[in-house]
Image (cartoon, rainbow, N blue to C red; front, side, top):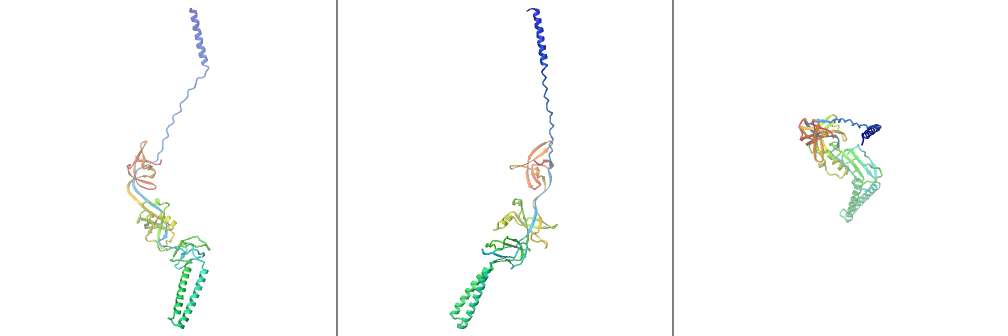
Length: 343
């Protein structure tokens, strides 16, 4: 190829390269994507508490009510009678022998009166026969037997009449009366009225659940506060020692109640009055204690999280007394360690 041809090719190549470069310059250059700024980690605010040494007390506190230790439950012994009189109301003081309730007795009273007349007539007949025939006459013996039979019938009628009246057997305060209305039929042996002796009182503390009485035992000391004055009492009955009762309501109450005997009660305390009570069930002195919110439990494992520098560390622990606010730690921690609270 000639020198002239080579030069032409070179010129054409430069022209093509130049044209390419100028064409490419018409396309806008792609912008570089900026990296997002790095977020600073949020510093977590942890609530902690030091493992402390001190005394821990587990106790039950609440409000107890004075009840009579001696109560009499009254009921009719026969069914079918209709109530004709209601002479009692809750809170009323009654005396032994007072008639509290009565059922209709018109027909029965008439029978008693007729029987009294029959007995009187037999007595007259007996007197006449004895005067006419002598005491040893067989007719006198027959009339005597008739009189005895009539008197037995009278005793039965009087017992029936007595059963139409609910009579107070003791003097005291009416602390319960079954809702009832005049004309209502009565049921035999259904408890209608409860009479309580105000001279023999004890405190009853009823918990919301039987589990809340865990640890309470017979003869435990009880602090009893009445009108800003403190008295000493003792636990005399717990659910495990409560007597069986046919009344379902009483049975349910006894299952979650303790009975407390209080020494030296003031004379102005009445049935239904209330008192603040405190029963200490457990206590230990000079032990390691943490807030209850610092104890964590997973299945049967008890553990805590402690703060060491900027890091957390889990430690298994052995707990002792647990109250609403504190936990005794028997093993796993030392005084002064920082326990992380909450979740």
